[in-house]
Length: 332
Image (cartoon, rainbow, N blue to C red; front, side, top):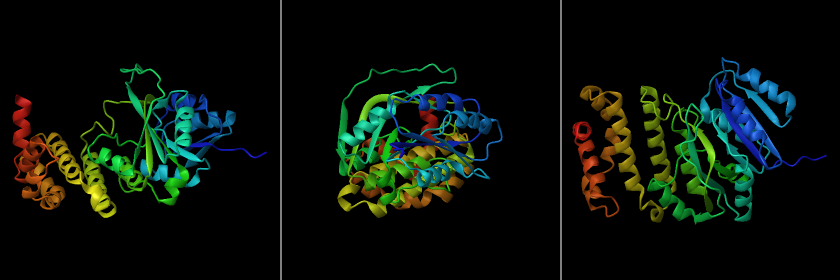
């Protein structure tokens, strides 16, 4: 008997013993048939593997792939993409979970409208498992083309996570859309940029199907030095990719994207180094000087899309005064 695999769900796993059962239970209980679950373990040192093996004994659609060392989430997801058999692919972080009807709905949307990717909303789950926001199910879906998707991405109107989306596997493989394996934090941004640049149609659902567990010490909320550096590397790699792969007509909002994200990233350094100007501006010389050099002020001030606040913050960054501005804002 031929078993049709509609969807491959890829879960990078590293020391997820506390939440992996909740994650798997939410996927096993999906209303969509033909799901395979691919778990890529990044050399966990806790009991995660033991828990997963208990599920494998009961559910033959779960596959476990073990890495000998922690290669990071990007490399784990790439392994999953290459091993997947499903017509569609999605990702789940091992400490998150999903609504039971998430994949049936996204599967129907992506097939009905001939999409390369479909996106849903998410809601935060804190450590006590209580949702802090809710939404009723609705069938409305917004369909946009590539130019609209590029604008939405560059204007910061699209969440740069890989896990609240469903992708056509053929689309990913045909366009060689994979994750950066050198960066452990921020790899989602580069991946999504590749999706946007190569897409024809993307759909957006207002339903909050994905449950994102927010930890106080999580990668995305932390100001750990290596994580901030990785985020910065991801930003540079994303900007380089966009400059090389967008047409001139599609670059209308690229300068806005560069300015806003460069300023936001530098503010993370200010927070990390607690206004130690030497450490802050050592990083300016190492990571930001070239970005700022490529954005001349006369071009910024002539930009009709950018607001005055964006221009002022970038001016202060370029001339090494942004930390003083942030300190004044915090005091006020």
